[in-house]
Image: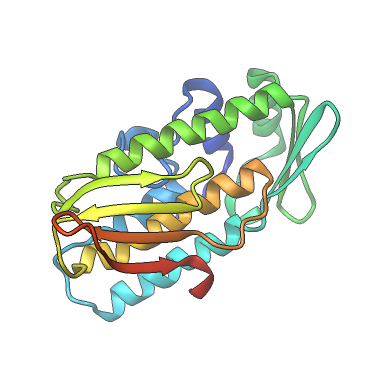
Length: 222
């Protein structure tokens, strides 16, 4: 899986306030680190082969890596420590150019391969606003899509720690079962960049006709 530069995520969030982190929004704007996971977890017709099992494992590895993003909120600045798995082969020169372009105080490539972003609080809020907008847009793209033809509605709370997915199905189909990782990643990504510790992301699947919960999932159980 290509984990090239979380700088891509920051760039899109600041410049166009759009991060396609967890759905099927505009392909050109999707960060590679999450695009691959989303595409792999949205297979509605393939049997549960060894390959799809490995895909699910990759998705959880991405969630674990996201947990390594640390946010330090100072009096005036916000510091984001991005793990090396997401920095990729980005050079210090490239990070300096990005920092200058976006007006960040600094971006430092650390000796362990991680990168430290320092920005003001307004820039951090702009980043979070881009993530929120993108997650909500991506969720809407999933509704009644080719990958999820039976999903009629997706709702989430403000910090994306709770999702309610309405489906025509009385039992989850294969795509919906695998797709739960997508919601975990949405909640996980927003949590780590906001600097709030989240112990769990909860997902309820509700039948469209009866309104009853037909299945639930919690990220803490994976």
